[in-house]
Each structure stands twice: as C-alpha cells, then as structure tokens.
Length: 510
Image (cartoon, rainbow, N blue to C red; front, side):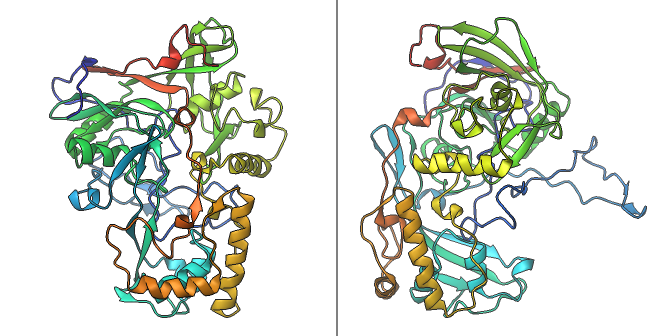
C-alpha cells in the first residue's frame, strides 16, 4: 500500500459524494473502443453523445418509474434505472503487459489486445470491408487485409477469410491488435485515505481515471489494481485527464448509491485551485455564463446563450506579477466548466492546451468573442496540436484526421493500396518519422509471417503500423496543466490534497 496521508476527516457511517462530473471533467469520459476508434456518423463538429451518456434527468425516487406523456399523448413508462456497477478488472487483465519508467514518464510495453463487439444495426447487410473503411479508421484497409491473412479477425469466433463477408444481426466480431499506449507522468498515485467504504487518492496530471481511447494500463483504475491491489472500484466522480488532485472511489455499489444520493441533495462542495494568466481581480468573481459542447469527439466547449446553465465562484489567492493563483468553486458540473469560464473572463489557465490556444483568435475567447465558426475552430485546434505532435491532448490519433472514405467499389487490394499511400502521406505531414517503411507487397509478406507468430508477450509486431513509427516523447512538464482538485467536503467528511508547487506564492515558472 502506498503512503497514507492524514488529510481529512473520514466518514463515520458511509460517505456521500458527487453524481455529476466535476467542473473540469469530460475529456476522458469516452468509452473504450471495440474494434478501434470509430468515425462519427457526421462531421466532427456535430455533438454526438459519447458512449454511456444519457440526457434523462434522475428520478427523485430510484425505486419508482415515473410515467410521462409521449409525443402522441400516450402513457410512456421509462426503462428501469440502471445500477451503477464497479469497474471490474482482474489479474488476467493486469497481466497483459508491464510498466517501465524512463525520462520521468510511465510507459506501457506494447501488448496484444482483443477488441470485441456485436454487429450494430446499421452494419447489418454491409460487408466487413464497408465497416472498416467507413467507421473504424485506426488502420488503413491494407492492414485489415493483412490481419485477415494472419488470422487476427474473427466472426462468431471463426477466422475471417474475406473482408467482403456480409454481416448479419447479432454477429460477434473480435479483432486482435497490437496496442501502444501514450506515456503519462511517472509521478506516483498517493493514497490520501482508505476505509471500508472508500478510497481517496491524489491523482497526478496526465493520467486518465479509467480506460478510454488509447489508454488502458496507464489509467488510475489499472494502476491502483496492479500496484495497490485495489479492485472493483466505483468512480464517484471524474477528473479531466490533465487535471490533478482529489479523486474518490467507492468500494461497493451500496456506498456508491448513498454518495450519489447526497450529491443530488447538494450536500457536497468541490474546491479547485489553478494558475491563470494576468492579474485576476482581487474581489470574488461569479461567472454564470452557459456552456455549450462544440464537439464531443475533440472535447471542446464554449460559452453560448444556447448552452446549459452553470455557475462558478472564483477568488484570487496570490499574484506574482505575471500570473495569479485562483481558488475555484464549481456550483454545477458542466464539462470543462472552470476552464471555459476562466477563458471567458480573460484569464485562461496558464498552460491550458485547449482554452489558452491561439486557435481561438486574437482575444483567445475572452468575452465569448470567437471570430470563426465552430468548424474552423476545431480545424485550427487540431492543426495546432498536430504540428506539436500532441494529439493525445485531444484524445485523437492521426487516423481520426483522415477524410472519410467512400463506400468501396474497387477490388480490395487496389483500394487498400490507395489507402496505404494516403495513410503514409498523412504520417509525413504529421511530422512522424517512419522507421521501416513497408509497401503493400511487403505488408502481404509479413502477414504470412505473422500467421506463424506467437502473439504472447511480444513488443513488436510485423503488422503494427505504430511499431514502425518513431515518436518523440513529451517532456514531463508538458503533461501538467495548472488545475488541481484541492478539496472535497461533505457533511461528515473532508479530503484535502497538498497544494501543488506551481500554486505557491513565490512560484516564478511563468
């Protein structure tokens, strides 16, 4: 067990904690992909809800189902409320790979992983080629052709021999991939408190709470399971991947329900600290600007009259002549609420990679002034991070940026060759160095080699595009954003994490 810090009063009879996301939560809430990151059904600017999100309001009585009127006036009974289940991973999951530390970073050795999914309704009657070429763009189509030859694709647990196979309802797909995870900070996750009901930790910046996108082992859930033997935890709230600070987990579903019930009664207070640009006003500031999601895929929000109502209180703690330390109390739980409100006030977080970006225009979004359309804003944000090779900040990879492919009408090999050329060109534009380029004929040869390769505990794979790329590691300081969850308080508990170094009065690292 890691060092236990005495930072607050532990609960006497079951804790209570939040049901909504924190004011800075959101970018790590995407569900883990099944066959790889899918393309959205429409343009990237359309706010398509992420997996698991629901818009329905919670019932005041979880034990009853309220009746409501439908569009035509008939009585409609909503489905029963889903139980909150814990995130359960076992030793077999933790044994998939191992960590190592290098240059201040925690790294995961590449490993083999099975993406699994049942056939979606919109796929019925479509070929596998169509599905891979229109929705699952993590790899060019040439990769999936080679994966078929290597026996990596299974349909109803039988090897796929032809991508032109047509999918039927309830078909089960399994795709074995060689998985690479982005590095995160090597800072340890300190356990602040633990009892029979909860675990409270101090989360470092850059580590997602739970598996999402390209992250699995480099997540708080996996690290706690592997290093602290803390399993089957129920996240009580989320912190944005770049945000550090107090993070609470329940150990049982019953405790989780009690905690969320208290949040519904508004008995929990959340307190954050951040460092912002310029001299923040000395008096207390309240921001009530509504917030609208611009893109769920990219994870970007902005102030807009059509957004959801929210409120944040701010109080300056210190000013060093260049930047200010500000205490924040989000009274609602909108995605990126603190960050968006600070941008609107003209004092964005000093190193916020999204809301303190030149992509927002000369005023950087102050006062809600954004001299471009949402589509132009997203394009410029992605282009900026693409040039910095920091797309992981947006939870994107290069394949997410490729134009949508048309429905294939040519022979598989011809289409695959064209896709490979486009894919290689896109990599060169992104500034990614390819260590061992392979053309279509070479890919076909290595697929035969991969058929005879044992996929156990191997760090390189002949079919893996990522294995042939040499990426520059981020600097540890580039993985820190100056936003920290300082304190969570309820009627019978209080958990506090240490003040970050960048929040000290005499800090001069601007």
